[in-house]
Image 1 (tube, rainbow, N blue to C red):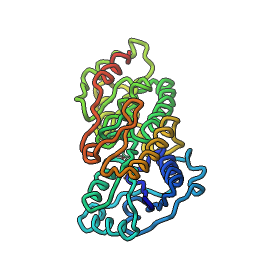
Image 2: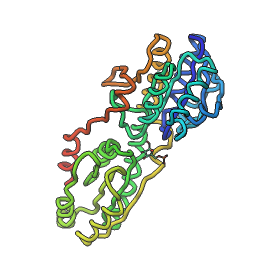
Image 3: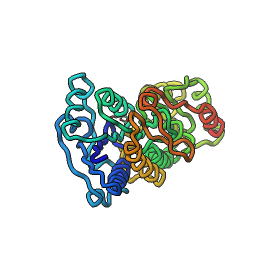
Image 4: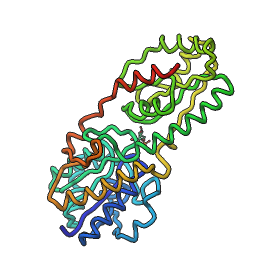
Length: 319
Ligand code: F6P
């Protein structure tokens, strides 16, 4: 193996840089050249590259975002775009491509495999919605961001005796909201995967002041419903003062947590090793402590199962 390409694609997530660094330095040990396509599949279509070496990835381990850029490309998903992308990779005579990204990025990699390009994926998305892995790079950092922000919201909620409806990201997945809900002691969590009992929540809020409860925080996954609608109904049903807070893109930024850094280092290094071993069309993942591989199509097609017991525990602990 002489030459590899790498790209980061889709919504950026903290730890992508650490994965790129690990891949580049692992390749360097084996004298494998690495080029990066900038801004994900878009840069691949526009043939924008940069050569990466051990020194060019210095001091990026702890930085959020992605220094080689990321993006989404409509053109890439068309048959013409895919053919053009595969052509560009062949033109550069790369022996394989490492794709660091989420669901759509993995689907793209699988399409490139059908066009003769060896691809290995490394899951990176704050949504944590890929199959075959317990964690994706960035999820843990986003979770930490949410719990710090929600504790600030709780301060003001408590001071002002208000109900807060807080929207968290996750696309169509409730993973972020579920884990954050437990970790920050939310009073209720609304996620797309489980039907929510609004009447029960309204009863609890009405009852809350009797229990000397000073605040009430409802976490809503963006894919579940509109936070403004939840706030409107809650005001109508409980006559409490309700405020909305949309956490938004701060959830995607920041220096990666220890967990995301270690995961990213392991995923980036393993991706190079897998290509060097002749593996293709697989994504690296982690199950428990162990690194595993899963066919890319399976990882992209499957969704993480929501742990119902975790959801119920949030309800039991919210007293
Ligand atoms: O997939 C990561 C994510 O941040 C989702 O949680 C969110 O729905 C989406 O990306 C936002 O995408 P964009 O950056 O294109 O607005």
